[in-house]
Amino acid sequence: MFSKVFVAWKKNYGEKIALKVCSILREYDVEYTFRELKGCDLAIVVGGDGTLLKFQSSLECPMLGINPGRSVGHYMSATNKDFETKLRKLLTGKEGKDYFLRIYPRLETAINGTDVPFFALNEVLVSPIYVRRIMDSELTANGKKSKERNTGIIFYTPSGSYAYAKSAGAEIIKDDTKFGAVAIAPYAGKLKKGEILSEKEMRLTHLRKRGELCVDGQPDQTITLNRGDTILVKKNGHPVTIVWFSVKK
Image (cartoon, rainbow, N blue to C red; front, top):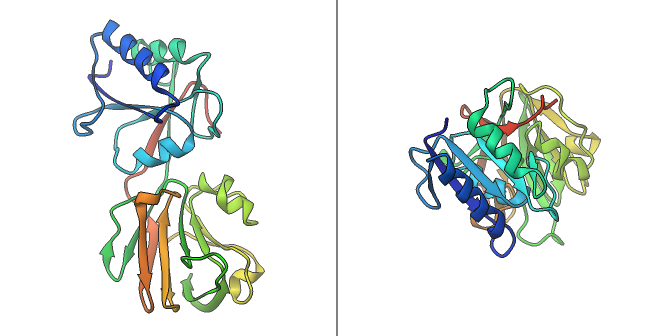
């Protein structure tokens, strides 16, 4: 049984389901909160992947995603039709039998040696502020340097390889020990030949006057870059755990 649950939802979209979730939690005398993240041993997020991505960076407990029905829901294991049954199964069932916990690796970044306070479950995007402009950078990956010209570079996790990175031409990563980098509209450089995978870290030096780094597509997780800024991207030691009700491949 879980003792304290964080409940969040997308505004004007998932509130009705979230209120029903709270009602079920009360039935089982489970404490819940809408604000306090510390001390929670489960998070329930109602919305699409974007809503889950918004909160996952601040959470260390397992997450259950509920999709109200109109969103992309790669990480969401329940819907508006079955969430009540699944939530009750989670609250009373046994891990490995009634529900399953899947661990997803995340990426962490640092700019000029200072840690960025957000973890990426999907990707870290480094790009010009305006997409119509080209970005010049120097990429160091697997011990090799290359000068890159493109309109952005996506550093992505295995689960993120199904999303933005895939639309940019990257292959799906099946090995959770690796992460990748792929260019958007590559003009020159090693990434023009395709994505690069690494098990350790990659480093990018931004060579244009202005740019930005964005974690998981979140506007409030965006940082402005200046010429000469160096971004270190590597696997994070704190993966996120997501609840499923069948074995997730």
